[in-house]
Image 1 (cartoon, helix red, strand yellow):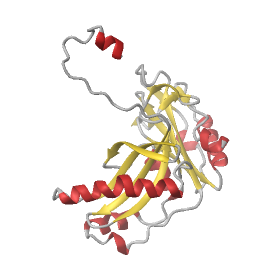
Image 2: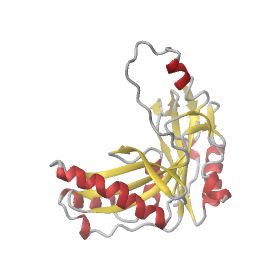
Image 3: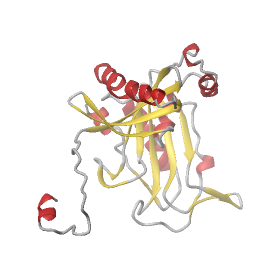
Image 4: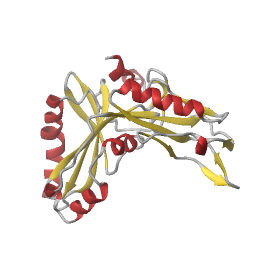
Length: 257
């Protein structure tokens, strides 16, 4: 790109922004704040790429798992001291103390976290795996934030591993699919550790349809990530839907390591 700039290929632009290229592994770190204090609210790792092995175009997210194995205790201390706490302190100084859920999108390499984005929400599909592991009533946490009493609430998490796999329409994210029917979601038997979340679906004449995009989320929690992933894959394979596509390697870095 520097060569192209020197050659004058961007004649209409007089200013350029040069940024550091960040390489490493992505992870998500969540906190919940009442404006005075904050508490840890979980970690996850999303898989943005459409293809196996994190290849191909970016998507809204093809799956996630929690907790993220790359956020060690050492990394977490850096996230809090170098990213989260300075942000909350800065907002308070501006007269706008932050209340709610703060989601830090990170790149981590050699135990050094770098912030690439903030979101004022739970992510999708990160939310699915966080909710599978959260043992404290979410409403209780939200009300405590509103009343500025978050320190009075113990936020407890399951030690198990949660994973969600997104089923999208074939061609996503490049090509929009035609409306297609999903025939048997209500017939699939799930246990108490499994959920099938609907996203881009609608019901007509008691039948389930989709018009494309990210459509379903098979989600499971288990003692280990590999078993949870196997459960999700089995659920998705049972779904009678001709336009179905999903990745079978969600969580591959954590499982392979």
